[in-house]
Length: 377
Ligand SMILES: Nc1ncnc2c1ncn2[C@@H]1O[C@H](COP(=O)(O)OP(=O)(O)O)[C@@H](O)[C@H]1O
Ligand SMILES: [Mg+2]
Image 1: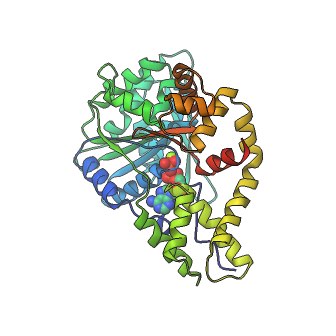
Image 2: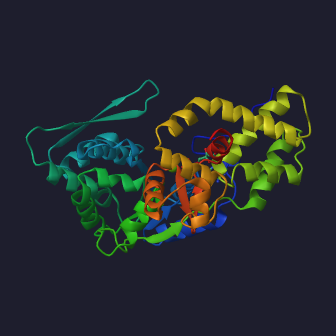
């Protein structure tokens, strides 16, 4: 059996990546002119993949590039450790001994050492000297790329899930980071993440440290036409015909979100192989969708059961595309009560990432979960 051409869940590269040409060009141009970018979109719209592609191309142009994910950082100390390692890693093709000694001279109170795995790759270890001024070391680490960079060796640093920095001692860390980064002349930053409302506030609110610190970009859902061609070509490479209508059907079920397009197409492809079909018809797409719902059934019930009754009613209303949530008619139909309760429930659902605000509409982050709610509540 040939291998499934659809990939989901991880950063996608090469032939698995499509579209986003304009965004890619804008990101590269902004970063390489020495400016910073802030990029936001809900989860699974393809931010990490897009930024990975930008870094890959910028690396070929000679930039030193670092991708740093704040998702796994839970303290300032872990930030210092992980970030140091990433910066050291970005220097691994240089003379390692010299790299370690530069690190030691640039960062106070922290030691770096290196060992090599069986393939000869360097693995760095960071250790802290106890009872020393952590803030001093933190500042040194933040400035490390600027210290290592030069006029002809610039750095591009990508901070993934950047809104998570607010967990690290709140505003202090944010202010400290900004005050150092703004002095960097040979490093450009791209800040991005999956909580649009939090990121927008960080960069648009006059009272926040990162106000005006970056060119702000919003990544949209996939353009339908590009998704149609991608799906048709990928199926064609396995000698399977996908009509434009069926491609549109898949894309609509996935609400134009790249992750769900690939996820559903992956399942459809699997079914086509099992049943030896070389044309995709609607019943097969419906079966594929059904199998995804079955796969996720336990998780979806768990997610639903920890919601209050009011939020369940609101989810039901949203699953039926209820317009004007605050209107009397909608409130009556779904028993939502006062507008203030609806507002409160919406806030919780937004914060949990179950619902996203798109323009002035509230939408399910996961279109499959929307179907689940429609069928089960
Ligand atoms: N440009 C793209 N081309 C094809 N698939 C994509 C693209 N961007 C995202 N995807 C799909 O969406 C999934 C999630 O992408 P990712 O970059 O991790 O999104 P995010 O960082 O916004 O959560 C990928 O695993 C892939 O299936
Ligand atoms: Mg991501």
